[in-house]
Every structure is written in structure tokens, then in C-alpha cells.
Length: 113
Figure 1: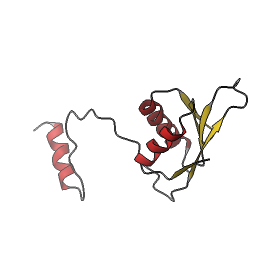
Figure 2: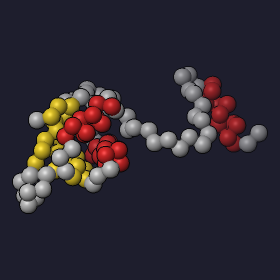
Figure 3: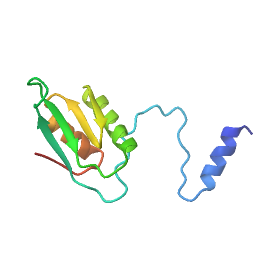
Figure 4: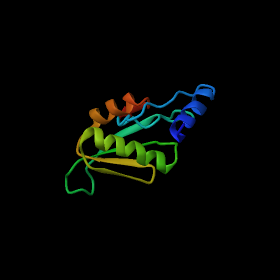
């Protein structure tokens, strides 16, 4: 019995523990906030960017690490650039409706302003 079989038997004995499928390479959405679900605001901003549009998501109540995970998921699913700084996510371009749909798909409340 190798270590994988031992781990699988231990996971099966845990309450509510399901054994993970081997070779599961799918990218899962980041988990939604576990605490109180705050409503996120999605804003279009053009100031200070030489007329170029940027979509900003603000109103997060979780730590910066979780915000960075959500930003990475958004950037990958939308196929665009962006960043996460100071509790806000910046997505390049006018992607308000796409960002709203992606955030609602992972279980977050949001509104477009």
C-alpha cells in the first residue's frame, strides 16, 4: 500500500471527506466569500489613463490574497489584462457586463454603477 492509498483511505474516513479524483486538471473558480457577502461595485473609469477605459471592481471585505485570486480568475476568464491592488481589481477595457456575469457565476453579489 503506497502513500496515495493510505491518504485516500484516511480521506474516506473523514466526515464529509470525498476523495479527490486523480488527474483532475480543471481550473476551479475561486471560492466565494465565506463571511458576510458584501455587494461589489463595478465602475468604468477613464480618468488619468489618456482616454482609455478601465473597469474597476471595489467593495471587497476579504483579504488581499483572496482579491488577487478573484482577479486572476477574472483576467483568465475574460482574456484581458488587469491588476489587484488596495482591495480593488482593475480590468483593462470596458468589460462591465462580462465582469458582472463572471462575478455572479462564482457566487458574488455585484452591481454596475
